Length: 161
Image (cartoon, rainbow, N blue to C red; front, side, top):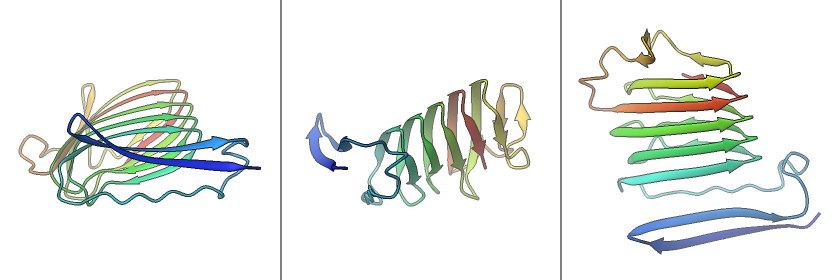
């Protein structure tokens, strides 16, 4: 099976864009382990991260980054996302036919809103007790480090811990 990967970095409208694409024949589920990408981003630089994950196993470790905005679109994906350990982050995760585990580091407060259709959702309610339509840390309003997270999931499995 021929596998060709493309890695493209460009600057557009004052923003850097990194595109990693897999092309060629074969299926990611059957070719598991053949393609591996590891991308390191600069720490201390405020950034917005948009990740489109399609038919893959993916791990996004953002704990050391200064992410102010995050959007993850996961389709047919098994993924885990580790949120930044400092700062204020506005995050949106869209998952279709996927399994996504989201880890919010200790010491980071969160407010989580979930819209899930035919999707089991597990939220650590000891850290993020449910209040109406949200799961909220008791110190969310005063916390220096916090995540505002919205999840929209269809036919997926979601865990927030």
